[in-house]
Length: 412
Image 1 (tube, rainbow, N blue to C red):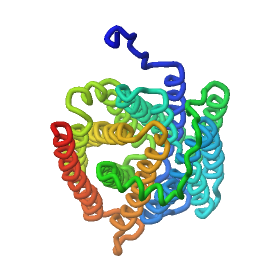
Image 2: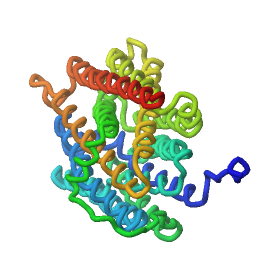
Image 3: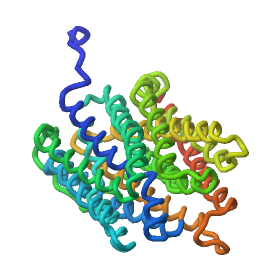
Image 4: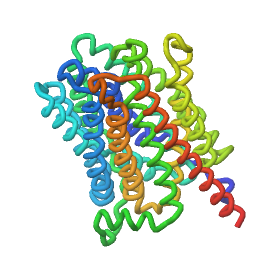
């Protein structure tokens, strides 16, 4: 009888391997977060405006490449796409660390973005090897890998920056190459190949995805969330350098703190909360936390709240994102059929990549002051954080609307 069937094992060997692979990949990504703004400013004299576009250039190229990588992973398998993208990350990080001019630094970030759209492929891998009942837990595992990456990556980046702000990028290059070798030799293919369906063009597939109103709404919410969060990520290190006099070392520890909270939430509580409240409710709660924290943090300074208030604000950043982001990807994955996981999650991540390009680009303009173009001022900080708060408020309203629609479907 069905009730007597053995319960499916969740932590299988392939799932553990992909978790380790994502973790190593995201350590490399996390290393650059607190270091890149200081590296660009100190080595090349980049202004906040230029730094915003430097960060945006990576995500613009990632936006272009992500749907292609998701589609290619559906056709040729997850393993080769992950392998090639990691080799690209290794090469791009080496170029970034060796850069002697600002254009070469931009080239390194652009090349990294071209090969950097691999998270959707990793999500599709987990979707391949988990049941629909375990999908939220699987997506939470990616969130846990993100959290661990944010614990170790920024801390390592901050420590290595003591030996030169270019040194962390050499570490990223070596780590990504090691990750690629690990993946090539021990990660099995997860894609179950069947007869190939006729493929439409990339933009035709994106528009097809938006014909389904629920998926379209999920994509809009995810897009707004990532725009707001990427604005915060872009400005945060510059904000702490300006208000608290922090360097990449202190910023690395702050981002590590964010990662600790993320791993505790997504690795330990997210799946349980999703079962109790449902993913749609978690999107609403996470959006509310982000809105409130973006609104309040620019008031924090050494004289107003100090480090304690700064830690509370960053904790709300982490908890809000750790609830909303994996909840949306889990919902999107459940909406997709098994043959289109790569394409569906690729479209979602493509929207996220576009958001990560728009967020830093907006930060470049919002932080700019005509009276002091090379520096940040109080009013530009408030303007930037409050713009992110307004975007999150819109995301919260959309998530409430989605929640009401989910309830109507449940009781229809």
